[in-house]
Length: 66
Ligand SMILES: [Zn+2]
Image 1 (tube, rainbow, N blue to C red):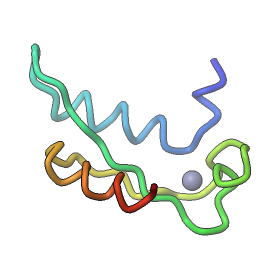
Image 2: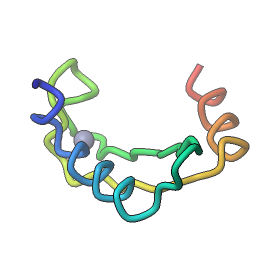
Image 3: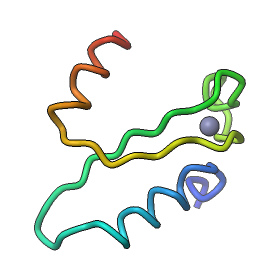
Image 4: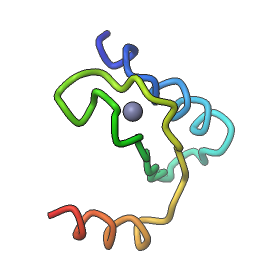
């Protein structure tokens, strides 16, 4: 279970447990520090900010990364 090695996993699961609605998809945004190992193929080792956002707000952010 390598995904448990990422610092953000526990935060995402906590948000899901506290805010999810059965039958609905929840979109999350994870913001990592610049020095986080995830940017170099490693496991997230920062203290990321994890937010629930509507898909309409996430899509423009993804387009900026391309
Ligand atoms: Zn990180």
